[in-house]
Length: 108
View 1 (tube, helix red, strand yellow):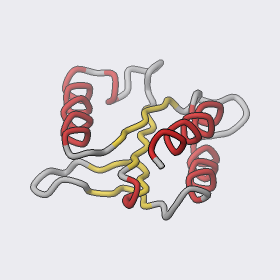
View 2 (cartoon, helix red, strand yellow; view 1 turned 180 degrees about the vertical axis):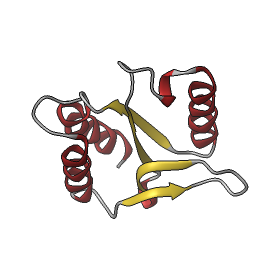
View 3 (cartoon, helix red, strand yellow; view 1 turned 90 degrees about the vertical axis):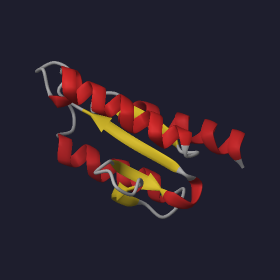
View 4 (cartoon, one colour; view 1 turned 90 degrees about the horizontal axis):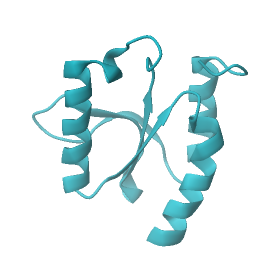
């Protein structure tokens, strides 16, 4: 967990940062017939943000089936033209803005 912000504060900050770049949708279902959802997305830019926790506690994103499902989800998204940026809760606040700047400089 981030030492300065708890997970709810981090989620609030992520939404605020993303809102500067477009309309943010939380829990966007992007593939008909599957339960796959992006944590955050800017649909008109086909940009998705995934926050992965539990790397120190053996959470769902780091265990066998959860890890496999995450890879399948990311691959399916990329095959459909989505850019998916993945972060841990510890890394997102420091990395998100520089990565968004890079994405928008290259894309638009």
